Amino acid sequence: MAPAPTALHDFFESLGADFHSLHGAIVPLRVSGVGTEYQACQKGFAIFDGGDRAWLEVSGSNAESFLQ
Image 1 (tube, helix red, strand yellow):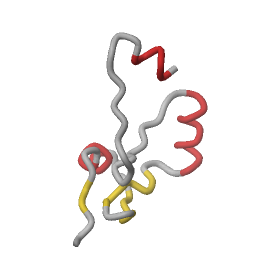
Image 2 (cartoon, rainbow, N blue to C red):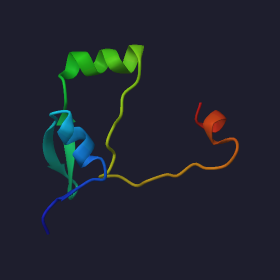
Image 3 (cartoon, rainbow, N blue to C red):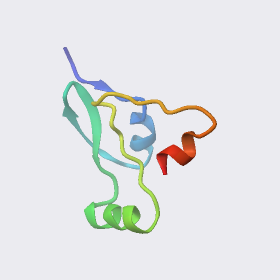
Image 4 (cartoon, rainbow, N blue to C red):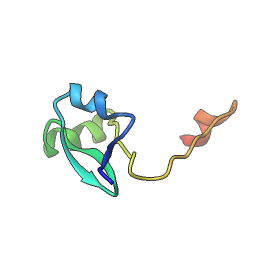
């Protein structure tokens, strides 16, 4: 079976990401380089594509505070 793109594939592709196959999914490897991405995690935010893993949905009136 060929690897499948994740739900975020088009988003990361629009950013110019490099992709690789992992556990049957095509996931982004890097977008702007390790240093830039590391700084984004420290000083702002980052989006990770975990499409090769299980999904967890958090919902309800306290979902945001639960995740913080």
